[in-house]
Amino acid sequence: MSKKIKSLSLIVVTLILTASMLLAQEENVLKLTLEECILRTMKNNLSVAIQELSPELAAANLSRAKEKYYPTLSFSFNQRRNENASYSWLEASDQTITKYNSISGGISQQIPFGGSLSVSIDSYKNDTNQRFQTINPRFGSTLRFDFTQPLLQNFGYNISRREIIIARNNLEISRVQLEKSLMDIIYQVEQAYWALSYAIDNLEVRRHSLKLAQELLEKNKRSVEIGTLAPIEILSAQSEVATREADIIQAELAVKNAEDQLRVLMNMSEEEQRKYTAIIPVDKPKFEQKSLSLDEALNIALSNRPDLKSLQIELQTQQFNLNVARNQLLPQLNLNASYWSPGISGTRILYLNDNPLSGVVVGTIPSPRTDAIKDALNFKYQNWSVGLTLNIPVSNVLSRANYAQAKINLEQATLNLKRQEQQALLEIKTALRDVEANLKRVEAYRFARELQEKKLAAEEEKLKVGQSTNYTVLMYQRDLANARAAELKAIIDYNISLANLERALGLSLKNRNIRVVDFSIQD
Image (cartoon, rainbow, N blue to C red; front, side, top):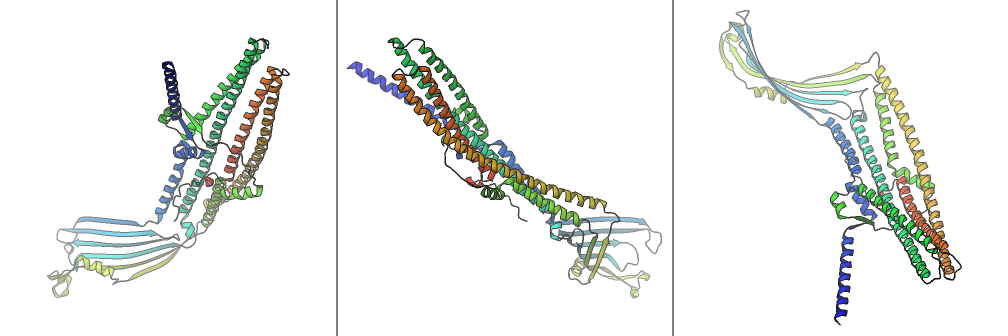
């Protein structure tokens, strides 16, 4: 009875240790779906992080271009003192001294049609010891409005906003280029994910094939022991076992290489790499027949491919540059308008008999500096001027050269777009053919695998009755393993070809609800 208890205890301990080992192995395995791999890559991949900086830089350039229409404030203060020798007793007894200070402020603003508007106000004080002054110190102020508007060259809403328009187009180009980079990364992740899935399944196929060879070897050994089989028959089975063990080593190496490729794309941290010794794909390759006509594919691609969007925006930019260059061929005709309101005040000096030449001061009537400012703000004295300025250059060789260059750039952008459309058509046709071909490959390899299974089963039955050889059975086993691997590879290739078609159509982000950050491009 005690022996039975000891045996049961040993079995229980063995089961506990086995379960603990399985749990430990489970903890060291990172199981990921395809979507989880893609999200990890979007978050951590270094190439993605680098590409994300381009739209941010373009957005900063757009913000800087918009600063053109920010108002500009200006302030100034000036103070001086002049001393000169007196050349006449009528001017001063010994020397003339003049003290002057001024304060001014203004605001200027570019307007959307290429002109500028400015408003300024200034105030000054002039104090001198010269004789015969009627107002001393004297205060003056002027409120002024100035307006300038080009009427030919540099005229127009879009012409004046050319820096903003170009910066906005560059931002949009950066955004769609980021989309293309993300789609390429997603395709790389799918390739790596399915490559790992295939490597793991292929390893299982090779292990199963090795198991069959080992079982046949053990069966042959027993047959040799009882004398029903010649010893030399063991050699072929042993050779095949060794060969299949080598196949497993190669398959294990492929699994590790595929894991490393996926780790690099996801930019796994060193801590995670130490924690997880293996990556297991949760998703299995699907075999769902999908059909799409060439016309439908072209319509989808023209609306979604980032490379075509980028070249279309570049074409718009070059067309705009041509319009700007054409505008620069016009002469400069500017409208200038000004309106100003002066004001003056100061201490009035009263002379005997109202005669300043007498030099006899009988009193003063002071007036503060603010009175001059009030006169200016109340438009007590109104002045205006309007004029036109025409500037016709004798030679505009440079402008004509810029215009010719702009025409060439536009033609080049048009040809680039047509070339890329042709390339897109080629990629779509190739992707559609790959999907169709891989679909047929899957069906063909599946039929071939089923036939190999039947052939092996039949040959094993023949071996049992002595109508076949070990060598033939081993070869059929190898053929079955290769057929299973080929079927798995065809299914993986089919899934990768679907991913490539998705990328060629520009749907990699849209189908996963991944959206690039929408940087503000409003004016």
